[in-house]
Length: 163
Image 1 (cartoon, rainbow, N blue to C red):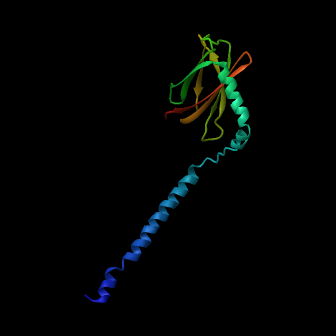
Image 2: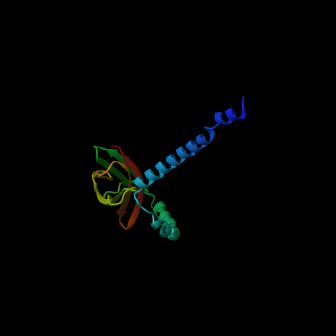
Image 3: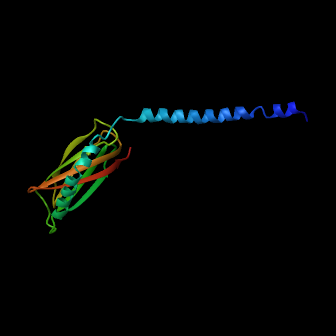
């Protein structure tokens, strides 16, 4: 075998390196493109402000724990874009809270412009319900505030609406 044959036999090796790095660059380029296409542009500018108010947040949590309320929450999808939320409220002694003002703020954490507020109406025995018409399937955050006699109870739940 001659030296020229050895050189010709391995001439594809540099091109294999070029092809490998070309595939890596193409894959990274595709991931960057998909990332920019799916980014909603939402930012959480309130995180800094929440951090500054952390002591107030802790105090609010202590006050809520001191209330001793027992709260039950349920979420049930009832249609393609509909869901029922239900909240049950009891005070520290197990007495049903039947005159609370209950509001739910429904937040779409991944898309701006879909948030709304819904009142929950009292049904019976400390149960409050609302039928939600959600504009999109997927993940939603439900932030409930129940007010009763000057006391406030806050509850946040993440739910998923199936398509």
